[in-house]
Amino acid sequence: MAIDDITRSSLRQTGRILVSFLPLFVFLAIAWGHSLLRLRIGLYAGAALLLVMALGRLSRGAMMWAMAAFFAVAIVLGLWLENVWVVRHMGMLPGTALLTAAMVLGRPFVQDYARADVPAEQQETAGFVRSCYVLSSFWASVFLLMVVNAVAAFSSGLGRLFHLAVQLALLVVATAYTAAYTARARHRRAAAGFTGEEEAAPRRQEHGA
Image (cartoon, rainbow, N blue to C red; front, side):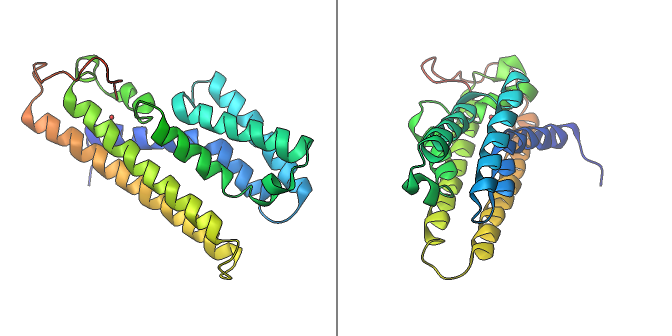
């Protein structure tokens, strides 16, 4: 079945969100296990990749700063100052940083990636901003579950591979939901016909999906 332009743009947006997390994926892939050397390499590799992606605008906004905060804290406290607590709980810190950024900041982080495929005249509408808040809230819930799963890994006795599989499953679900929700919202707006007269979102809200 052919993919229409709206679905294609929705998949592109979802892809941009996933790509923005690549520094964390690289860190987790390299640092997996109990080796301090792998942890050191993973942190430096992830931080370097984040810097390159930030310069190339592949990572931006709230999530970029959340990852920057994670790598800064992990490198300074975990590697340079050799804080044992930070090293032992390194697995839960990325999710905690992302959850904090998604919930505490006053704007939906999805907006940083949604604008690229949405006409300027739609970016101030209530529907567009509402979609961004829905998706950002959903991702915040996923980050929370990832933190809970990381904490449970210390005492569950189910093995690290099981909890890694849970983390990956959460990412798959989040990705599928984001793509489906975005495509549905854009198809609905297209079917209704956008005239540019839809009620604009209040100026005090940041523009968002």
